[in-house]
Length: 148
Image (cartoon, rainbow, N blue to C red; front, side, top):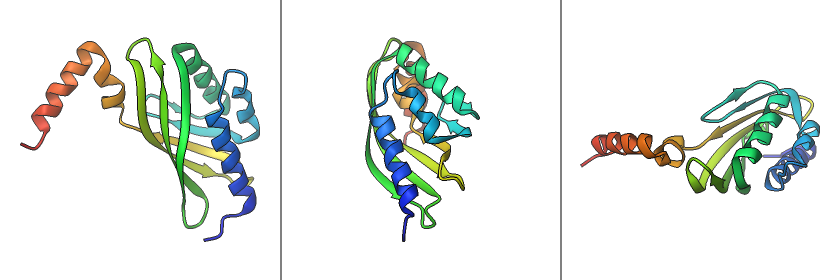
């Protein structure tokens, strides 16, 4: 499989963007992603780059020391998509310190910009399950469904 150099460079820049993300660098997304990019995670479905940047600003307001570390990159055979395996760490008022892994599916448009970023991570365990009352209910349901 041959990955076009411009696409490989874009993904390398995108990875560096997330690993070095600070409130001051949020606007650097403008050079990497299409204006009509789609961003999804367990809480959001956004369809504009400006909304994604607003989400990142809120993340820095609500989260202490958020940090992403990308550990692996997997390309689709036609090099139109890549999967990033990452670790997200930080601390939030509602759930305290967190440290969990996830995956992101990154798609590219014909101008070699990111047009879609879909995050996959287990929100029931890493977020909802850590909220006092909700967490207890989730654990009860999980225990009920667990193979004995």
